[in-house]
Image (cartoon, rainbow, N blue to C red):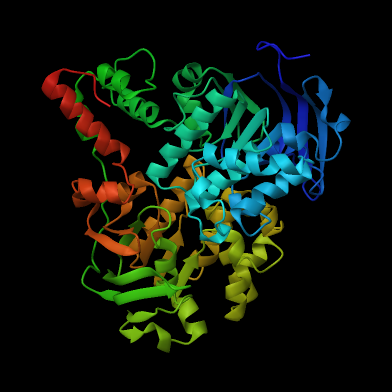
Length: 566
């Protein structure tokens, strides 16, 4: 019997999950329903159990981990315990936060075939279903490609295609745009909503950054820091009535809501409800011109070290597998300078950062660190001077507890135990991981793992810190705390090079931006000058930070009185 649209397709009752080694539940007494063909956004601070909840909904948890799940989950009237192993995964598909973690084959075609064979798809249908799924996400030309050659955005689409090939009735996406450049994020959100309309599945999205989704969703489900439901209802009620409460919980707000809240606190916004779109925001501003000044704020660091170079890259190139990944890149890094590296997925940002840290050797060119070639530094001395935070934090964990991970480098230096304990406890408090000190690093949430990876570098007080997407997976509060730590480092004379797709972070913190596209450096200069370079912005798949776009829109409205902008 088919479900009617007003009947729940999935329901949870008093759902609670606790890891075996933890006394506190990850999420607690969660009750909610999903209805056919709706789009629901799950929001909550880092570590509140969003990803764990998603993994429980298709039975991957608790079967894959040591933990206890209580309460009930039912799908189309049957509890999940009534389904055979693997059966429910065909109907409830999930794309993980890190898509690479769910790949198990070498080529695109084999990855799709693997899933189809597991559900006993007739061999004569597999080829057609593979082509159909790849075509849905515009990856058909890459059918025979090696997965490791795909860009981050293409890997996201492949993971999506693998799930779509199984024709799920519910699709769960865990931060699907977190590692994508701005253009790829918008494209993926558009693709998913287009597919939802065509295939009529129910959509559950876990996301921190909301601007690409806010006008597409039917309902918001909000978890608080304790993993309990804070709100379940329509987006307008969620963001207009509970904005300040959500902000206090560390939950990212849509940019227009955040701007409206800021303007209202300054007495500049007269709207009765906080706006969900740009037009309503500007209409509600009592004085749009004053609004420009309100939103035009940037961090101002004291540059007392501005003329002291600590690193210089000269004509760097890097080749791999017969391909030139980086070509003739030159720039310098000053003491106390905050540099952002931006560009589209696959442009060479991570490769460049690994060259600068000494993890990769350049094919040609030279890197000078404190006026000495990087290749001449002893490894142990270099690691005390340059810190590197990987894009995937799990790649750098080497101990069995959070405490030991941070203490590791201090132990190598043979510092007194009391001094090590004091330093570790201090940094644990700074990154909000004190209560998790005894846990294995791999048991943390993605956001917590990211903070731990940053903490392991900050404790050594290196001269130069390189970070690959450090705010990915962070809630608003923890992202702000991380940036405050980096700001403190810069103020004290340390230098920071940060890869990021977040244009608002670049605008607020960066002294200089390096933009890469197709392995070449296409821009080096201030953020303010970058916003004016429309061709470079387009070439590098970048978009204006929200405050710049809002200023432009306010100026357009003030000049014409016309609200019909995009």
